[in-house]
Image 1: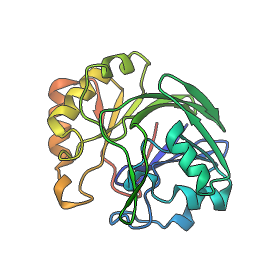
Image 2: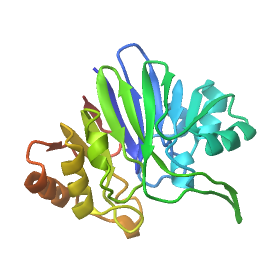
Image 3: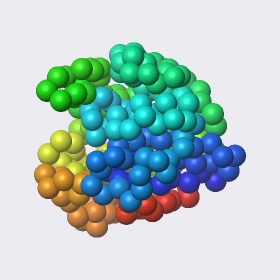
Image 4: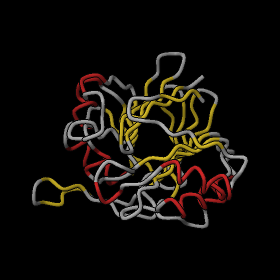
Length: 231
């Protein structure tokens, strides 16, 4: 059974029974809510939804240290390779690529995407969401996104666990995220991208109540940083 662990913000680890470890948007160093350090993480795959610093995070350093395969949108992948990530796979919307223990399909997200190196904006691309099939379960990592109607199509993929941002301000807030839960119709929804910084302060219990009204068959699992869920 796959285990999903919240590092904090939108950073997660996925682990299966065969020792495969996937890091998703590994913002660890400088993450004010993370309970571990980047040195504690040894992925063999890294997935990055978009180029914002709070999602790229420690990806390059982790890839160099562990020789993890790093998977991202092709433009972002080109930049990651130029930074020294040793094995990079770039792909695009609608495409699926395999990694140790699973596959990832790229789906849309409504957001922006750029990496800042000091005063310079050095990496671009388009934000994405990921449908990850791993350990016999299907996960939807929405990434940073607004609500959009084609989440209903994503739901047709048969999502077991949907990871949705609820922080508002930079992404959809609890009301729209509850509608997203209804559209995706996952068995389980896990909120993320909230309470990391003041502008995205939210009450996850209020989100749970909203989902109960819109999608009563969906369970909301609230994870504190460092906590895990077995799917």
